[in-house]
Length: 197
Image (cartoon, rainbow, N blue to C red; front, top):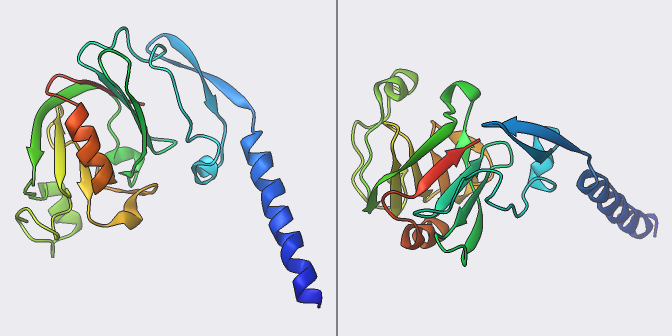
C-alpha cells in the first residue's frame, strides 16, 4: 500500500521539478554585437528549458541561401529556408569538450550522400586503435548524409548511433539522427549560411 502512495508523489515531485526548470530565468548575451536572450541552465537541464523555437533575426542579417543555427549549449540545430516558409528544429550531438568546439560563421561547401570517413591525426593520437578509413555504410560514424562546412574537418552529419544525439559525444562535428539529416540535406544547399554559437 505504501509503495502505491509513494509512486504518485514521486511523479508529482518530478513534474514540479520540471516546471521549476522551465521557469528558470533568462540571461541577455551578446553575440556579434546583437543582444539576445538565453536560458540559464545547469548542464542545460537535459535540454528541457533551452530546446525551444527561435527566430532567425537576432542571428542573421537575411535568409539568403537559407540559414542554419547550431546552439552548442542547448544541443539544438535550427534551420530556416530562404523564403522563411520552412523552419525546423532538430536535437543534435555536439563536441565532447570546449577545445574541440568551433564557433562562428561559415557555410555549407559540399553535400554528400553516403559519406566515407577518415579520422584526423589528432583523433588517431587519442584513439590509435581506430581504423584509418571507413567506407559508407552502417559502421560509418557520419551516418547516411553529410553537410561539409567551410572549416576543414567540420561537418553536420548523421549517425547510426542514436544514443549520441542530445549529448556531448563528437570530436568536433554536429550530429543528427539519420532521418533528420536526410530531411535537412533536402532543404540545405551549397552556400547555406551556418552559425555555431
